[in-house]
Amino acid sequence: MKKIVVFASGSGTNAENIIKYFEKSLSANVVTVFTNNPNATVIEKVKNYGIPIEIFSKTDLNEGDVLQKINVIKPDWIVLAGFLLKFPQNIITEYPNRIINIHPALLPKHGGKGMYGMHIHQAVIDNRETETGITIHYVNENYDEGAIIFQQKINIDNLKTAQQVAAKIHQLEQEYFPKIIESLL
Picture: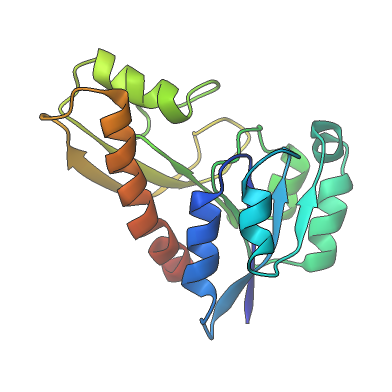
């Protein structure tokens, strides 16, 4: 059985979706969720599934405490699902090409530091773009610059607000993220 570790910073909708998807799988399951936010709603969602949650600080992440905990688990994949901190080089080095992230835009557009959530969707609206989508990519030492694994586009000609774009993107994330993870396994 392959082991998946998920990192999340907020509501945990993608983390919960991944947990549900693999809950009855014979090939893989989510074994732990890590969060840097002690107030994140992902904590309560994960508890409902009986999956251990690790709450850590930015210092723990950057000074190796989180890597030590990951090494005890020995995951096959590390999945960033709404995780907002820059992933440290020591974990990337230890788990090369086994860390993936989902980004709510078509990279390389709207990537980089500070480009997350509604900031991205508002930029899409402000730029009067006709399409957007999701990108699933490997994590490297730079924000949103790892090799692209998968992209899915949607037409947004008829959408007028960042909230409408966010809702469409959320649907794409829910549909494709677990399937792409499974295909990588």
